[in-house]
Length: 154
Image 1 (cartoon, rainbow, N blue to C red):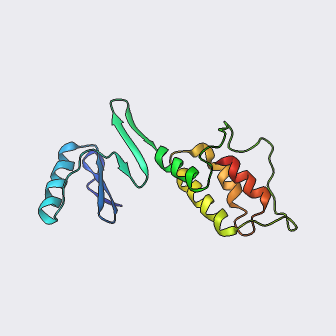
Image 2: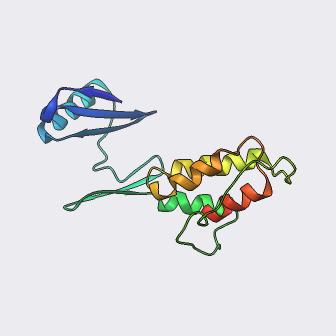
Image 3: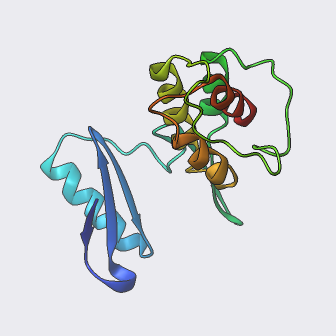
């Protein structure tokens, strides 16, 4: 992230590999910045942001909305949960996950992959934060009980 200027004429530039996102309140400042960048570097303007790092963006009169529908579906497909039954609660009420020394262990690498995917989904689904945070505590030695909780989140 880079910043240029201050207050209403300031802009924020997000850079990821070869993609730039330019954000600011003053459209003239943004246009001038884009012109300077196009002179300095070979680049093209692709219009308003619609998709960036697995995040779908819609912009309109009512504001800016972000979602990760495609990413969420890919995660469900990747972990064989695409046809699962939906639930309104990501974790059963009064559910208590804890370390179970004698519990049957599951593949910790796979468990970490699921947790990583779920953590990235939190950008647009903060309602899952508590459940994913609790499940994240057991990445070292996850058991079948922890895996069931993660499947419930999915």
